[in-house]
Image 1 (cartoon, one colour):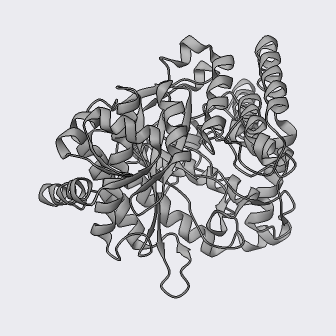
Image 2: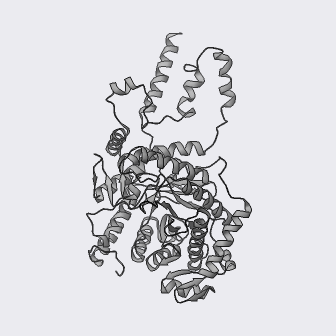
Image 3: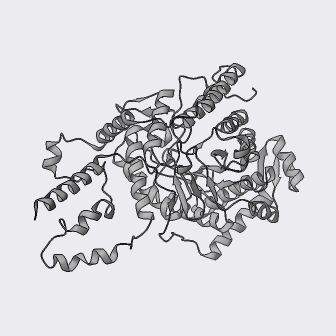
Length: 516
């Protein structure tokens, strides 16, 4: 080999090494699935679940504990008796038919916009944890700075498509005013799409007002920019708080997750198909109501899905029945032509241990094969949602990258080029030094950063570092490298002025703001 050729080869190896050592924080595009879906129900069984759900809506009814919603339903033609609403199946079908099957999420940075629905999906980190395991793996109460760190990590992790909202609860701010600082943190520390607080109707209205300041009032009225979540009280109840928040989002054309809170065997029958039938009825009643509020508003078939241990009554994750229900719910959502949400990487472990990994992997594979669009709780969830683990947050995000790679399906683009290497190497050779391998090794096979695949001797020589500590080392490094995607100065000032005014108007108390 000539001197020039040697120099070129060395520069090529050096460039590849530099590329490997450069952290890629560019967000992956929305996942576009190319693998076949897992659909265990036959068309007759789908019709059976639909018929059972419609029978519940028509004859058992759903309780809407909200005077405005009851008035809305009467005007829409539903039968209303006290707080009970009885929904004719034809009315339900007419209403849900106006829900968009697809739309685009618009982010502060247009490069992070996301097509959504049908075969497009997105990963969203966990929310709502009252505790965290921090950068030293200590379980404690979170602060606003801890929340900011999770928003920063969400911004930097390629497979995480949203910065969420209260990933952890910031205890250093009064409950009544907390939603303002949470929303600002979501907007300030990431330029991806995010979730908006729906803990009360007033809080939801504040979120929408802040989105108007960030994007423009006219823009948000025609462009989805934020996601709200409304949880139902299974069995068959929607309350005033959630319905008021739903209206705040739907009136302004912002997507709402209509999410029955299912604990299979506790607030649903102890049966997989019967649980899905009840959940389906609950979700359809809220989805239909979004269209009563505003025809054509985006809405997402949602659920929080768990089964209950008959030994302790505690919720369980990663069980086979949860996977089966996810498969079924995916089929029902596609039957109605609406996008759907599920929960990902769930677990009940108290630390980031083998149980946490097994439960999360079991859940993720089912979620991907079920064809979910909005994959919430995709990073950090542990202890049945009681804490967000910083270490697990990092590893879950890498798991999402691997799941993303798998769900993209088989890449055939370089098949002929790769096959041309076979006669070059021949019997008994190896491909490690072949030009095709050197050109493609980084993209041909996923190389996890968090999983150690070295020999035990090398692992011991490097300090015998377990995965929790590896993940915490990475989290610290990422936070040190973080560069804030600066808000426009005028927008930032307007947001801070709004927060200051609302904090003067809302009494600083440890209760949700319902009145101010």
